View 1 (cartoon, rainbow, N blue to C red):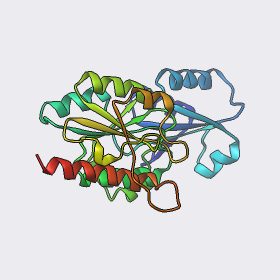
View 2: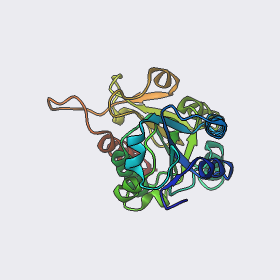
View 3: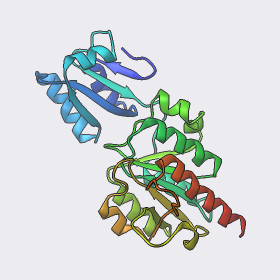
Length: 246
């Protein structure tokens, strides 16, 4: 009932959730009925797992096996909680560097960011449970395997991660064009976390408001923005540059 990336069948999904398997997303057939399917949906909601209701044709494309109206994507990595990530890092690092991704949805951008994060010594990446790009085979491939080396934590809401980091003495810097300050006017030398926004709308307003600082990249051409993975790389290497001066 299980391969490296998917499980299918109602009972299999229920048991996977109960066993704390790292489920990224569950695809459920529209109109699926029955006590067992209702039990499954209750477990999905209780555990904050992303679910999508789709026509049976979608499920048939995902697997040729007897899916019983449900297919779940299993992450190839194990996620931490934000508390585990931060506490473990602070035990060994005095100036940690974290990365928060607010609703980033493209798996290849996610993989590219993980790869750059590993190369720049990022201590951990924090994503939201719902709406974030899953860790798939494409993510792993694009990250060049870095997804197995950089700790990744999930949380219900990115804003909660911002508050927890701040309470832990970690400055939070939002990467946004909605500021006059460039990255060269903001210090990355202290313990800090950088927030990158989604590909289409950037960082949500409530999270921008919660951040300690905002910083933008100077854009000298006609195009108004960079790909998020490229922009993230520039931010991370500016942090590396500043920290080498310590």
